[in-house]
Amino acid sequence: MAHFAQIENNLVLRVIVVDNSNILDEQGNESESVGSQFCTDLLGGTWVQTSYNSNMRKNYAQEGDTFDSIRNAFIKAKPEGMASWVLDEETCQYTPPITAPTEGSYFWNEDTEEWSEQTPLSIEELEKLEKLENPE
Image (cartoon, rainbow, N blue to C red; front, side, top):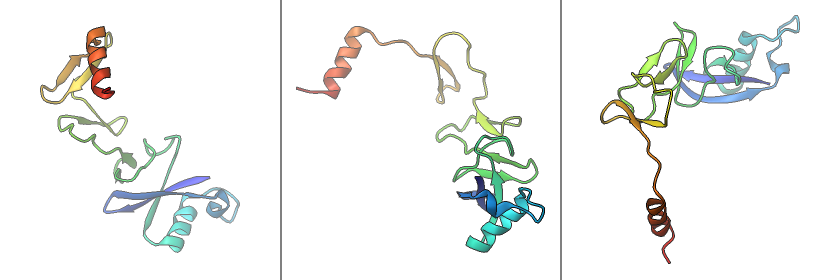
């Protein structure tokens, strides 16, 4: 099975699955251009092949992602609320501007734009949460 993303103004609108028999050229080889044309004839619009295993175009396309024809890559949408994150040119995904610590448990704090240590809750704090979630 092949996957194709419908693109409009570089934005991924949807992704569909196409049977391999519909993307074969005259010599019986899989062809993106044949698959793209199949999708256009069937549904209209502009279609670009994507790979579920991300072995082409950096990332598997999903609705809301961007297709960058210069990079020939699908760029994942920036995570909501993460204005400080920057595009990693290698992966075409947005990442925090500071690398995460390798030891301990941390979360990205967008307010301070730094990694904050995640401390485990005490037994008393866990019991309080349990009572709040399951009042008697």
